Image (cartoon, rainbow over all chains, first blue to last red; front, side, top):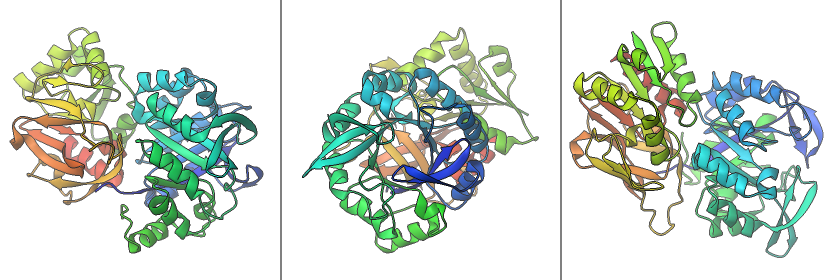
Length: 252
Length: 208
């Protein structure tokens, strides 16, 4: 039976790990390679790096981090942030990433998802959707780390990226991100019900119960979290044992 | 000993290189190449594969003499070869991803899309799944039944001769996830991404 995945995410800025509270007020907390190793040894099912300043700054630091991490971690590694061109993807994959996550570039031009999945295979193309609630049961896609409104309906966009070859959707609720009040379960339900590719839930985890809600109530195939693992509140193992105790199948 | 990872410009093989480098350390000389001369003198070959069945087969065919060299190595000379993911799938006669495409034809069978029961099972099949060992395999030495392996695929290899199947995994149906026939080995899952258990499988292959 396929297991539900737990994916710790490391937000990286200038080669250091940070975690944003609603994408502002960043705290510095460690070396990404070391952190990734701790997660991998602790049973993380995958590791995710998000280069949060890639839109504006030099991307070479993240390439170097990916290269070092990939030599020491033998679980899948996803890298996102500022992925705009086929060359960006080539560089990250050659450095050792297994998947890339595309956000703004996919919204600007959905053909980019098609070109990328055709060239590299759907298995390594994750589309990251940042969504914000605009009315009851209605969510809109945002870009640039939640700064720019697009007017695009999140559910429609999810279907569109699936049709264009995305292998997975990384779905972040901009309303919930950094709040520790749990995933936006309604948003998750809306997306998982209207797509047939795996959805990774992101944004808002504060307790282990939230992970349970993302999988069981939201229908997510994987749950991504940053701060609850990063600041040592819980270990990956705690999360897995908790989920297992509630009959959610995980890799123990 | 020389182990060659065949780099035929198809998909991302960094993780395969990293994991084999980690396991091989100084014990083995590891080459990453499509140079036919080097492949001929190898002791073992790893055939990775990412992307579609068609794109992988096309890439293999694009390198002059590569398919014949691999066939001579694995079929005529019966030296150990490990296919990973689409690398395994290409052993088949035919694949149906993108377009009907002729495979290497080393093990009779076909590669078709997983029947996901009308969307009941999400595709790609991504993540950690348990393997059910169906027969003893040299690459499963010290690997426990029901070990977790990392999968990423939407197509499955269906061999005609079921006796080649060394492990299956459950996802909508029993999917073939590992095969062994004499010197030929293949895994649908990614040992290079399957943590310590995966590295053990690589170690078993290197130590054959």
